[in-house]
Image 1 (cartoon, rainbow, N blue to C red):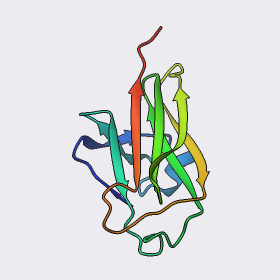
Image 2: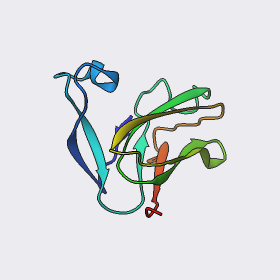
Image 3: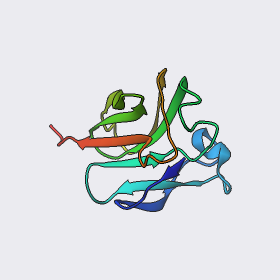
Length: 129
């Protein structure tokens, strides 16, 4: 997938060496983090030809978020009838920022080469209570 970065800033995120998400990082300590700097959403385009033109409809989506604020994250995906809500989750900031994993399955994916957004992530930040 191709991440469109027009309203994102890419930076390194500190993580614990050789644990969790760090197992696949090149130096065992940092992974790229996309931080929203404008707007409330960002999107990804499907570039793998095996998934394009609706050829694979049953898909498991795995997303990793670095939670630094209380927020609700809605994930939309391209279906034959247009963009649909695939998953919504509310994250509460614990004592310090942390990485969270979210998985969900969709059965009617329809990623097409000419479409810009295959998956759209919308983030609503919540003020602390």
